[in-house]
Amino acid sequence: MKRRQFIQAAGAGVVLASTVGCATVSGSAKPQVVVVGGGYGGATAAKYIRMWSGGAVDVTLIEPNPKFISCPLSNLVLGGSRMLADLTMGYDDLTRKHGIRLLQDAVKFIDASQRTVLLASGATLKYDRLIVSPGVDFIWDQLPGMQREGAQDSVLHAWKAGPQTLALRAQLQAMPDGGVFAMTIPPAPYRCPPGPYERASQIAFYFSQAKPRSKVLILDANEDVVSKGPLFKRIWKERYKDIIEYRPGFNTADVDARTRTAMSEIGDQVKADVLNVIPPQRAGAIAVQSGLANANGRWCAVDFLTFESTAVKNIHVLGDAIMTAPLMPKSAHMANQHAKVCAAAVVDLLAGRTPEARPMLTNTCYSFVCDKDVIHVASVHAYDADKKTLLVVPGSGGVSAGPSALEGEYAMNWARNIWADTLS
Ligand SMILES: Cc1cc2nc3c(=O)[nH]c(=O)nc-3n(C[C@H](O)[C@H](O)[C@H](O)COP(=O)(O)OP(=O)(O)OC[C@H]3O[C@@H](n4cnc5c(N)ncnc54)[C@H](O)[C@@H]3O)c2cc1C
Image (cartoon, rainbow, N blue to C red; front, side):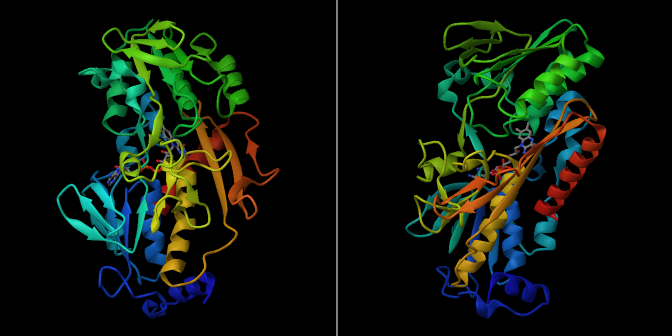
């Protein structure tokens, strides 16, 4: 049975348990999939495995946070046009509608030889296939000053939406008019290529409304704006000329949190009233500890047909944690697409079938440049069997001609769609 027929059969309510391999390590009647991380990659994979297996695969999702908080749109909280509550959602539908077993816990250790995971609570779970989507963690030892006591409480990253987003907003509100907000951007690759530039635009928008004498200083380790460069730079010139200053090639090597000073590798120092440090990044800690980060010790290389790790069998890695294919951004949209390719492959593999040989993935990244106007970049990524990677389909990419409120509506629809696709 091909996957399409399988999915149609599942939709028609046919009982499929017999089509899925039943020789499970857990001894349970159904194959067991454990998913680590209930973000954009993990929650989507959990839901689609349940749907596409017609309930024939048991799925356990492990996530420490009680609620899902979206990083996409979190820069608008800093700009003041959205509340964090607007971006916060429950996991209830995943359990109620899709029968996913959700554990509010964290995975401490993966034993690939036994196919078990150890949870912080002390429980051990067995798996037939493990899906790891832990997002990113920060490489703090590249910024020694940020490891001093209290440094990370005063100089914030706000690169994982949640309490830090609110705390950075409070710092911006408390800053006097005429103050300087400086943000540091690490060398690519990092989570969400256009995200820092959207953030700079949002804070400049806030200053233009509330603190017009204030400045936004962008200290970018990269030699140029990494994503939508010509558009961002044009918009900054047209809308925020007296507010935003862009300094490329400022590779932050250390930070003095007490004086809110960023230091570059060549010794330049910049002191700010509010300093926002986006640190260098790598795959989430659990992936690194488990030997999955086999690309420079930072990212997890995968087989793009299944998203199975190239380092450890029966473990699949999704989202920001992977070593991406050429020109593939670390985005929520891509994590969602990884999750679907992986979910289909895992259902096939558990049923003893060969996964789809020609996956296609799409991506659109929207960026708000004020409270309403938006720009985007889009791309299509197709599997290349010779190169064994996903390559951008020539001519498939596109960027906005300029910012518009109509794109702002599309961006909000994109967000509602991906939230529903991930969680409902
Ligand atoms: C400011 C900002 C704006 C952004 N805007 C956009 C945008 O407009 N469009 C877009 O497409 N992308 C955007 N992104 C990027 C997007 O947020 C990420 O690419 C996406 O979240 C990646 O999904 P993920 O599943 O890899 O990680 P996440 O969504 O971060 O999920 C990882 C989950 O794993 C959990 N976890 C970690 N370790 C463990 C463990 N040991 N045990 C159990 N659970 C664990 C975490 O708690 C977390 O919930 C933005 C990011 C930022 C920071």
